Length: 402
Ligand code: PMP
Image 1 (tube, rainbow, N blue to C red):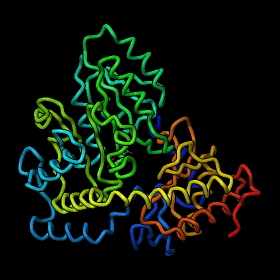
Image 2 (image 1 turned 180 degrees about the vertical axis):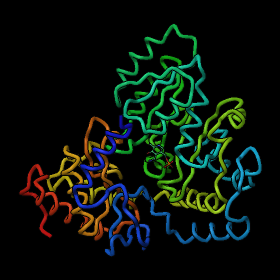
Image 3 (image 1 turned 90 degrees about the horizontal axis):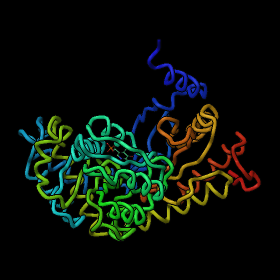
Image 4 (image 1 turned 45 degrees about the vertical axis):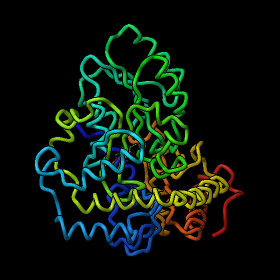
């Protein structure tokens, strides 16, 4: 019996494109939007660097200073020797940004979900999660001891039905949704979800990984965009996307929040974030807060790529946003398209099941505020040519000339 049969078969199918889409090596990072790959200068159109902070001069300067003053790593967990003033300061910054009383910072966004969700719900409780939830949410359910119930993706009526069936259960019910879904780029109907959740006296946790720094007037995410910040009980997020670094967080007004610090295993049993990372994230958050207009450039760029791909004749995700998902069906053909893009100097993510919902194969493109219009127009033109060559366009007449 081969435990990895499915993975091996899928990997073999995609490698028929002539390269390994899951083993790409960036030889040199040129900027927040370009890298050298296989000797070619390549436009990065598959990162999550939504605000382009990875090469921001102030973030780099802050990180360098922290490196010099506080060293390369904390070499310890937050409950041992790994809580520095700056970890606490970042927690205070985030609590303030969200107008919530408390914040815990984790070493990754994955761990923020793993820790928050597995710890908040106990053995008598219920986690009611969107069926298209990110792997970190599914893994949190496995790590924890609560009963797990899935509802149909983005379907408040289905959520209502499932919560109604739990009406006689005394345990806590925690609904888990995401602001922007990482693969298809669609938003949760959060206003409706919050209304259903409150009707059933349940709690709601929103993962703003892809929506912080992207949605809302000040960049808080979908909670702000849909004006439900007050009603949302828990928000998780990551520093690995719009903040341009690594790490994750949980904010909440929960009473007795600090008990989580001595109950949450993915917080307690891993080393804390290095000081340089904390410093760069504090700087990127401060810059977003000082200049929320940064998001305008991101959304202008979203228009260019989303409508460009759509006009070229591709089937793109329903909701416009910085994740532009080009829908294909056959993984091997999607891999050929991915490879052709790379050979033409464009990197996008090849996303395949089980990372994608409903067995779709996606060319997952993503947009950054740091992309120039010229870069994105070039991406659209190359996409159109590859789409035409491989017969991927719905309406090839719209294909853009190179
Ligand atoms: N939540 C969602 C919705 C994500 O897409 C991701 C990562 N892509 C994470 C959490 C985990 O974040 P990180 O990569 O910072 O661990």
